[in-house]
Length: 80
Image (cartoon, rainbow, N blue to C red; front, side, top):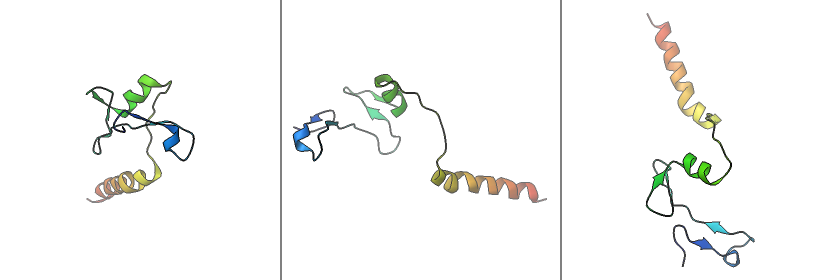
C-alpha cells in the first residue's frame, strides 16, 4: 500500500533508495506530519534533521518580484 507517509520499498524504485511521500500543501507549502498537524516546511525539516534555514531570494524571484518593485519605487521618487 502506498499513500502519504507510507514508505516505498527500494525494490519498487529504479535506484536503491527508500522514499517517503510527504503531503505538502500546493499553496502554502506546509507539510502534514504523520498525524493531522500541518507545519511549515522549515519547522518540519528542522525538527527531523540538523538543519537551520536562512532566507534569500533566488535569481528568478528577484527578476520577477524584486526588480519591478525597485524600478517602481525609483520612478516614484523621480516623478514630481
